Image (cartoon, rainbow, N blue to C red; front, side, top):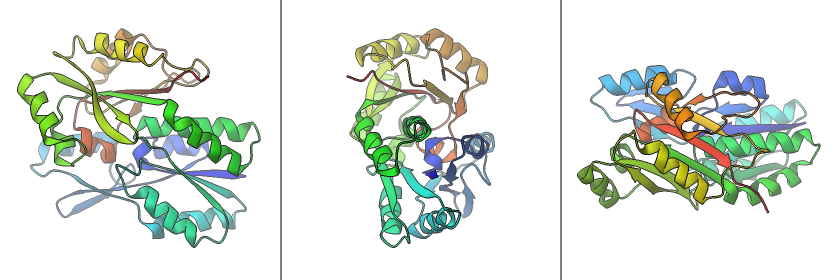
Length: 281
């Protein structure tokens, strides 16, 4: 049996992971000297409350090679093969840690760099599950995922670029321009890095801008799920936002996710996000 191991940067909760039959390793989030495990000792709801009340900026730490190694060996002991999917190597050291653990693992491991973040990474998890259900072997599944990374699209509407600037995920010049002009930024990933995809003058016009971005990339593959997540924004605002975009979220489950502490530390409160696979050839 192939077991998928992924980091909490994919924003799949521990509860959801159990239902899917995957293992989510938590990244660490710190407020000063207080340290938490994303999604384990700090829920998304608790994180956003703490973010609003604290004068400290949260810091995140990658999963180390030892933790990956332990997770790999635990699966080997149960007779499983391991497919490990990580946050983009351009945004986190998880990919390097997983490969370091792979080099000393007692059994073969396939490590896939998602070249993405949050639900972009989760999209590859769902693709992997579908390949495994079809009976594909470990190496073939990994190869297909690597070929699929270019078709993953993620768009996130943010209240501010300040948190991305603080963490060094976006340039000071881009962040300053956004703040100076007062627009609401929409960010995406390109070749594994975070970049500005579009902007709207307030949240009311954001769905229109986002629909144009979706149309520009060809729209979602109808056979793959469209995923959606929110940060500290009110659920009512999020529901309205999704309705205005007009996409059918998570074709089979009609489920939305919450952006957890690890990703929330970089995008800040109020983020709304969608992710999907574009149509193939």
